[in-house]
Image 1 (cartoon, rainbow over the protein chains, first blue to last red):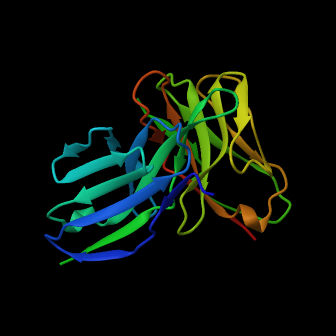
Image 2 (cartoon, rainbow over the protein chains, first blue to last red):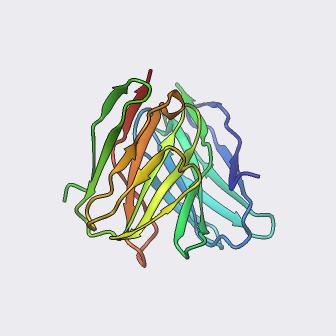
Length: 113
Length: 113
């Protein structure tokens, strides 16, 4: 089973729409969760961390359900500039004690004028 | 600070050739990583290092080698290039104990023909 699984999409939504992405992770011991954004042919960049109580950053809301090992990202009032691939990222402790981050395959979003 | 610097940006190799992808960071980060990203896929961890002199395998280490002789540099070596190694390679770093935000280099597009 993959460490992190996401719906690959693509999601094509009109400007102003609300869109939600989901992600599941396999390791119940994971403690850190993130959403990264990746533009075409660019490196990933941190969008936001995901906290147990849920958190919001402007038009973006992230939620975590530890019992179901499920993470979500909600984007309200979509802008053209939101078009990108959104990567779900989860930590896992390695055999040597190192804390590494594992990436989902990403969900592609295109916002249409 | 330059952040994470990767070279080269593009490279074409013939099957069986070898090369080294360079990665350097000037943020005094102790953790460094090499990821590869195949088209339409997420990032897969190749190797990582938690500090100078310490390296360990990630999910997909076969066909690669790394070294970490200094805190700043983390080169990735391909000894016998194969078409399956055609991918985009990202180097990343972070500071243990702070937020787990990864700082990425701009990537190396490698084609093995």
